[in-house]
Image 1 (cartoon, rainbow, N blue to C red):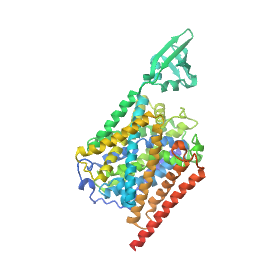
Image 2: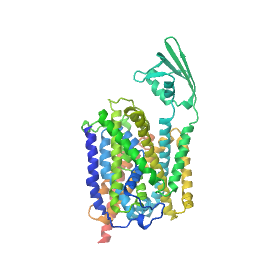
Image 3: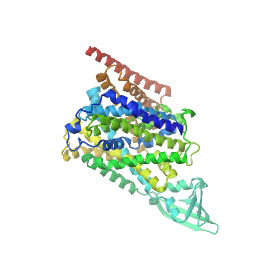
Image 4: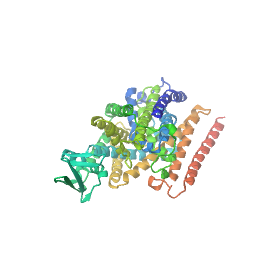
Length: 560
């Protein structure tokens, strides 16, 4: 675990040292008036205490990205630790801080307005539509994910029901006993193999069970189970409840609901990460070390090269364009520019710590010494396995609830951000609640339609998630370019390299993904040789660099 503790220390040092440097580069002024005081409207521009703003920002940006994304990224090996640490310090936190502070200086401007100011009106119009679509996709993802987690982890299963009927299981041996007699199982006239018995029974919800017949003989017992698919009303009820909460959170003044409940959720999410950290100290799992090598350990490494797949998979745990859409919400609540470093830079580093903890835990469970089989499991399922393996039932439930709260508290503010973006370009006053409803209702209708597709089509959610992940990183890339132009215009010299280098790197990542990823992942890698895909990504990056150099040279000539 030496690599893990070193990585944790580097993240903290990154906040203390590089975060201070970036703050100095921007020139935060504690005496400058902020929009929360000059434009207070009691709805979106509302002064709040710094600790409360930090927790809201942390929950806004966290979502399930630094948890499930980090778990999926850990499949690639120790390279994931490097990306989480270096990406958080030099890309993600810089992106979040500077986009938030630029918004703060520009009356709390939403992200597309910032794009327009520094990349031109054409970019503004494109990014308005792009960002609104992304926010709706975030809303869909973060309704579906928590509803599914609730259904999977808190619905009654056949396995649990049988245990109450005095059936005892030895999961390691794959055996079961009924009143001390060896039992064989048959589901819908098909015998169940002993090595998959427990896993099979845990997958069957009780709502689908029609009958359980146990026939105990002298030396053995036969368990016959009949099932048939039923409508999953639990899932639909959860989805409706979460959507209603999102609508209320989108409409109410930010300090009335979000400002009050987020600190509770924030403590829950941080407590979850602390619980896993303590589990490291107690169980001392074999977490891969950096000096073991950076080779690709993904089970399907041939189709999932580290570059660019890992950098898309981890997403929110290192850099995320979604974060920059949330920063203006908090920029409208800050009363001092010096609050920016702990709120924007600090929240991203905290998210990096959470991602690092989950990636390290997952790396152990993916390794040869794991005490549980996670092969083929989804990120959400692995969360449950980690929690139930390491913790008592009560703490496992709190851990899963922490993941659920992370998802819910990103979905609500994503849709709130979409409302504000639409209101900004329509110049539509948001103080009257009827005006908020006029924007929110069509937006929620669109969210509902996509949600229905994600549930009705077996592959619907996977497709939405892949496009969400890629679009999220594209947005981060565009935002980094806008920030680079801002620094070039306002700071001179070569200070723009601070964001130019991450912008070029992310341009390469998002460009290559389109042409290297296989069709199943949303790319053209199935029809293009991989070197060609990398070549196209490199060409896109080079074109972006040349365009920036030409613009910067012309700008300097005009100033001369």
